[in-house]
Length: 233
Image (cartoon, rainbow, N blue to C red; front, top):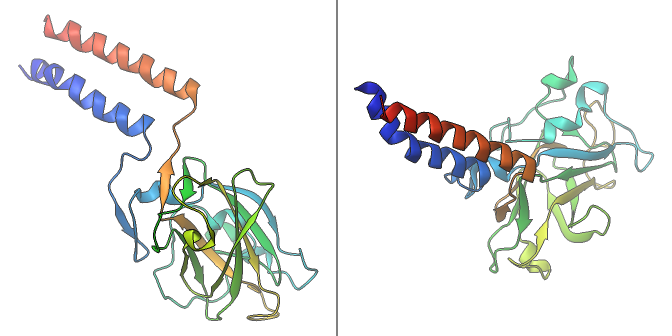
């Protein structure tokens, strides 16, 4: 009896699982780090493209504060929390320091930043630490041609990319953050802006790759076949 009950519900359950997998945007809105992200956790940067803490020749952060992947995913530091420099294993640090005048390029893989066609904030930079350190923000569709969308002024700050001429028809996969050489601290283990996370408030999902989709569909047919056989029992 239990087997038949499960088999009757299997197609519906499978459809939900497949939809959530193939359509990354199929998720509930979440308040993360005090900010509402309509697409939930997929809204955050997924990959490090480049990290150049010595881009300007200025002081660079210590090894413990130089793990660029610490800027990926959801923020680890609660909003408006003052946190000092890290020590020990870089992987245990919740943020990455840019270095004085240094830069970090991140990529959105399963989603793309877009405009909102209004004055709402579209991009949110989670910057932590006791110092107010300004950061220039640039966005790109291909990682080669960049467009400036101003800068954020320390702590967690948002950017309205519509204010720079973009809208919902524009899709951006790359974010470049550059520490303002003339603002904030000029030395120390965590010199430069300290980036905990970067999230796209206005975003659209990007489908998984075709091979992965075919694999999931194939598994789905196998599962449906098993469910059909179980109904005959």
